[in-house]
Structure formats: C-alpha cells, structure tokens
Amino acid sequence: MRNIHGRINVSRILRLACTGVLTLADAAISSPPQDDTAYIETKQPRDTRFITSITRLTACKIPEATDFQLKPLYPPDSRKHHEDGKVIMQLVIDSDSCVRKATILQSSGYYRLDGASLGYAMNLRFQRAMLSNIKTFDVGGQLTFAFPMEWKLVASVPYVPGDPCSGGATCVDLAPPQPRVEVTGTPPEPGYIWMPGYYVHFPKTGYQWSDGQWDAPRPGYHWNAPHWDQFHSKWFFVAGIWEKDN
Figure 1 (cartoon, rainbow, N blue to C red):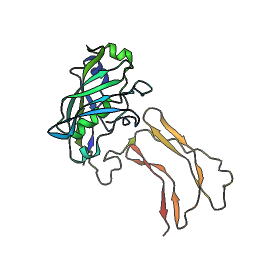
Figure 2 (cartoon, rainbow, N blue to C red):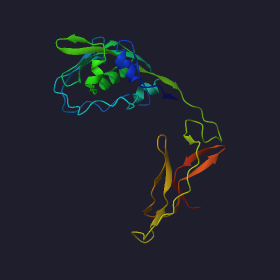
Figure 3 (tube, rainbow, N blue to C red):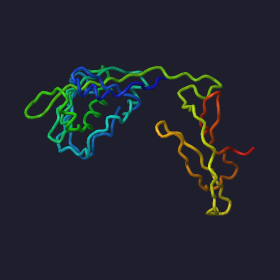
Figure 4 (cartoon, rainbow, N blue to C red):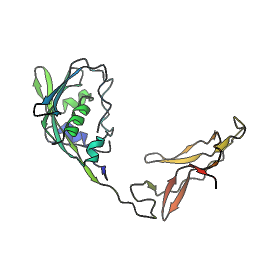
C-alpha cells in the first residue's frame, strides 16, 4: 500500500508557469464541476477513456478565488493501481479569471490522472494579482498559459509493533495540560452516561479543549474515555470507544 506524497508549489507555478510543477499531495481534486454548468469534452479517438480537453460553455459560477493550499484527492483507482506521473495542461482564462478551457499538452499516460487534472483545472479561479505575474499569451482576447501538475506516490510509513508513533501516526512532543474540571449538571434522561471532555492537539494552535457531553447508554457496553498516553518522550492520543462488557 502506498500513500500520496508531495507539495503544492503554487508560487513557483505562478512565476514560472511553463516550467513549474504543481505536485499534488494527499488529496488532487477540488469539488467536481457544478451540475448545472455546461461543459464539452474532447476525447482521444483511439481510446475514448482519455479526455484531451474540456471547455466551459456557460458562465463561471465559482464564487471566489481558489485556495491553492487546499489539498486535493488522489483518484482512488489510480492509488490502487500505483499510477503516478506528470500532466501539463494549457489553460485558457476567461474575463472572470476562471478556467474557460483546459487542454492536455503532455499526458501522464493514465486516463484517470489526466481526467482528474482537467477536473481540478475547471474548478480554478485565479486572483488578478496572480495572473499579472504569469507569463501568458493572449489568444483571442483570453489569457492562456501552461499549467504542470505532478501526481506522485511513495511508500507508506512502516508500522513498528509496540511503537504507537509509527505507521504515520501523529505524536506530540509537548505533554497535554491537566484535564479541566467539568460541571456535568443533570442528565437529560435517566441512565445517561457522562462522556468527559478531552484535549485535542492542533499543529498550529496546540492543545484545545473539547467539552464533555451526556450520551445515551448502550446496554452491554461501557465507555472508555479518550485520553493521552506517553511513549518515551512523546505523547499520543487514544480515541474513546464503546467496549463490550465482560
């Protein structure tokens, strides 16, 4: 099994549109094109699974400029079949700064990755400031430029038995604060169980408290509350679980 790895190098792509590469990680598709938006697809005559270009026929309905920091989704079947490669598209930008047409200039060799690249491109809306920094060519009053994307798979992080921080799991160097003292109040119904609050760790903001709550009982089961455990110098989170009674 392999995971998706890479980075979104947007600043480079916007400065050097003909040579930069958008390397997609852990996710490569924004939301699919709107259902009520009309498109026309051109397919390769020898293999109709390959879409060579897609054109928007109706007005752009993307409400705001694209957040390029959003990680897109790797096509599941491409991941399953270990497909990766580089796609270079030519994008034509309309007066709304949306992609009017996307054409494959260089195929990845896989129709799924090519199609995902075109689908991603048709959901892009550029900021005017970005477009002013791109080396573009005026074609019929519309801007056009090359837009490279690279789909890359790498080996997954191995799991080491007995090491909770292996296998890609997230561990934290800083110990969590002491749990807060919570006022539980009265249960909403007789027999309800109090599920204590706990700390959640976020990479940018650190530990944040998540309040406890009452939950309905589950006959034959008991609740093991979530908590943080220590492994050597690191801390790892153990999720809460309903466990069957002995």
